[in-house]
Length: 331
Image 1: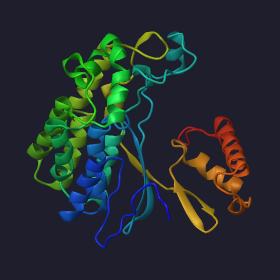
Image 2: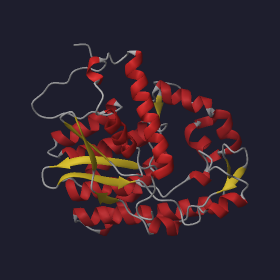
Image 3: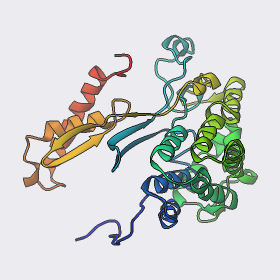
């Protein structure tokens, strides 16, 4: 049977991701005696280095996982909106829509807390074990993917004119980096190294080191740097006007990732599990519920009727999301 990816066979284990270096880092954790959660965390941090157009150290992450010990769970690594991100604030800025980039779009960075929580509660390895591969590739360099090089090249003029911090990192020497050439991110390497150093100086205990790493990020030098940058910077965004941000160190200090029950839908013998209304998950499940009574099996997956039915079901689900979905903590 034709597949677009190689078929992987084995008896020991497998790690897969969107980049071979991240997959290799995760596999190394398994080979050194770690478990699937250790592998996942190590892979995730490497992706922050090698795929910066998709993944970032201040991003967010939804995690749907199954543990033999705790069962099916969701880990919410989606940070909430800052306290100052109010309708009144944005309207005073002359906006009726939050820009899709820039400082007004920022929420509390969620992924670091989520990965630390997953490592602490379900992993077995130390912080150094899972961070070292990412630090290595950020410090020593990695062959830049053509897609990343093209993305940076397309933003070169914008970075130089409006986002000098991004230009300093992604345009070394004022030039767009070349595809398949070694690319380094020494600032990120130093950041993760300092987080690790502070964690190890605080304690020799694995869980206490992870807790100290979270303190360094959300209440320590990382949060302080973010707070200072947001207060002192006006950055251009897609509205065409530069704006000062709303995120603060106080916002970061009061937030952490959390576990929740997975939402699920039974669909023709399969149980599909998703995250809550802070993700696209409920829309996907509602789409399946709408399609459940239709005999899609008799239709070819590329047929007009198949595409039409799936598309219309998705449109209905997204329309319901706009009207009925809200944050269950408030609605």
